[in-house]
Image (spheres, rainbow, N blue to C red):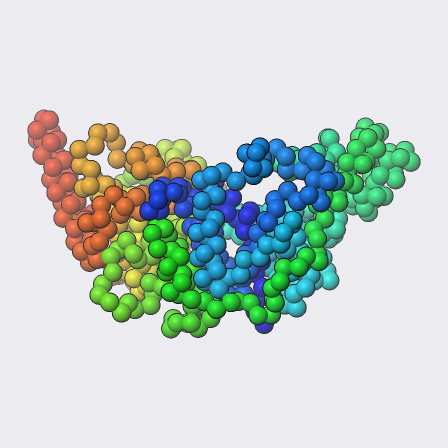
Length: 561
């Protein structure tokens, strides 16, 4: 039987709420960033583990009475509304029913038990499961469930859209403890101020690991402290501190213990529930989450066989990981869809210079959402000028030591473009004519066997579309300024992944702003952008000549110069 994926849904929707841009709103004007982030994560897990056996666990009570009875300060600092006793911001609260309806319609059970947190439901299911369990959570507390007697792993999000999988065997290297039980003791010593768990003052994670390695357990550490032991990292000051907070440490240990016997009412062997595409469509109606919903349904159909889909790429091949990403890869029964209904993938390059003919690729990124990112680091084969390093932060030495050969990167990027074109996806970038022109030059330089123009999919250039929609807006049209105009969060400008994600969200905002443009088919929007670019270039050229630069020539080529 396929692995069982348990979602720490509250931790995931909080992460999405604070990391996914809120520029996209539903018909009621409410943001849907948390919904988008969770659905995209679920789709990613379905594909990663080739399983539709997914359960979304929830907090029925995020400050359970049995825990606050032990430590009243548990999570007390998080309460936003003293009267309601809730930590959920209203902008997030309105999104949760939407998320639950879509997940339920997709056949993903919602599991919550009165008076408990999601962690308790997860711990119970992990203990009961007869198949491998994958816990998906950014919360380190769930590492306490890792031990050698169960086939459980914890998947935690890392920077750049990557995920870190941890099992019990990884704990000694990652945290210096042998198993989940000792990890919970380490966490009790370290503390967690965000949960109101103080720990032992002055004892951080490394010191806690050292003490546990030398004494074996928290109980033995306390005994050694009381006995006046001064070895094994237990200085007189630390011993005094541990003795002083002994009661708090044991209370913390108890508060952090997850229940393993809650009555969740779900037959784990019967998961998933039936997937009802019509119900999913109804749940998503008016919510402006089309891309994320299609991403999820496409993933579920690809593993359940609910709809025809091309076979997944086999491990070890050069096939693109973006293939078969959404329902858009399935032929549509009605006429051509609009580009805005296609799967949108952001793209960006960071390079060695500003001239496309001579610039070399340093980093590249394709971004499908805030949680699906693929990046490349290349050794450009030349010195990275200081002016370029100041922009993206990559030094020549770092690229040489850690980057792949330029020819390899160029080949892989072309494979991505080809796969996206085959799927019918749309690639989005800001002033993408620069990036594609750099690509063309790099292909000619390193991979002349590739016909680059033939692999270019439908392109949305947010620079060109924005200038067409709002031609008289004053100010610069850089990605940073355009992101501000459309209330798109740009977390790390001049990072390829961050820039690609920002362009992606700007494209959605542009589609919202102009229904006429968003209704265009892929062929129509490509032809229109080529016309707009020529017109914009001619206008700029005329303006420059009027200002005295009689020799000014502005290239109107698109999508490449």
